[in-house]
Length: 185
Image 1 (cartoon, rainbow, N blue to C red):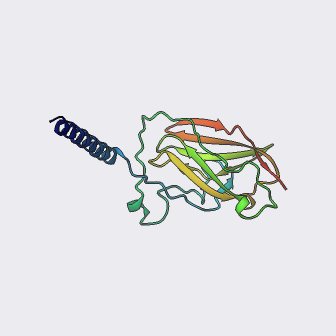
Image 2 (cartoon, rainbow, N blue to C red):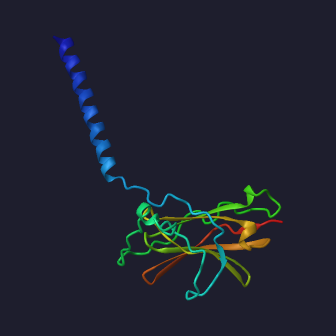
Image 3 (spheres, rainbow, N blue to C red):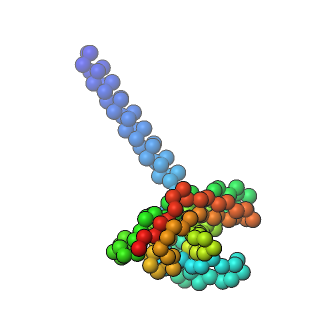
């Protein structure tokens, strides 16, 4: 008798654990949001800073990928009452590139996270010279990505300060990278 009740107890525990696993799996499936901006646009997207009225040809976002891209990557919904989050992320993937390095060593990736629907740009300053990656709209996952090359960027040897600027519905927030971009010869 003792063996049967012990066996039934183990079966009950196993059934309860299986039921809990199924419930957790269903919950995660229903709550999980799809990653709609997981494609990282690649282009030479560094440009000299321009006034807001000047059109830019290098503006890219997770929705500006072609005529049929809107079906695959719907535009993020913009909440005009949203509070703008300060930009964060890896603004420069390699803070010490060398102009004499290999092509792979000159490749950079920049990441900006902020409020969905906000625009973000990464700006580089050296003395009176300012350059910027083209502005991108933050996608549904809260992140924008750039892939770019140091040699193609127009950035020269020396120390560049790096900052990300996010704007949304008349709000603007800026975050300075704590590490300067130092381009070596």
